[in-house]
Amino acid sequence: MKVININGISQQLCGCGSWLDHWKNFSGQPLSAYCAAVVCFQKPEVGAHVQKADSLDNNWYIIPLCNKHNALTGQSLDIVVNVRLVSADVSETCGKEFI
Image (tube, rainbow, N blue to C red; front, side, top):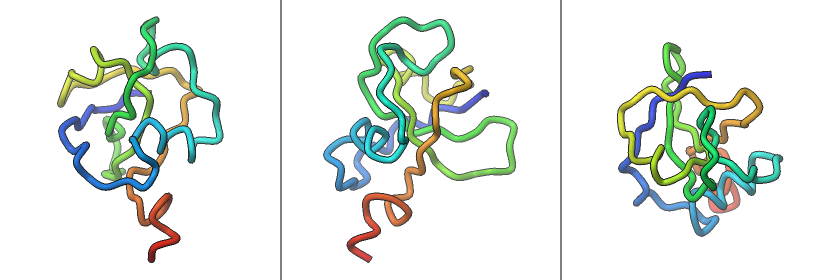
């Protein structure tokens, strides 16, 4: 799957403590030892904001990336097929209890 990194919105509030914790809390998957970018063997350090590439879906999602791949703002990334995209819309996830 291809995604576009839409880095630069980490200031949005998430009740999970960090966007990586947000991904861990709502993905239903264990955190991999490696970044979600294909053929990257770095440790995932951040929950990166992405959008699906070549899709009519304009929603924002969180995936675990290393700092190197997270810095590639606006660029298309191939990610491993088994990583789950978690909604960055806190009203659908960690913010539900506050609504």
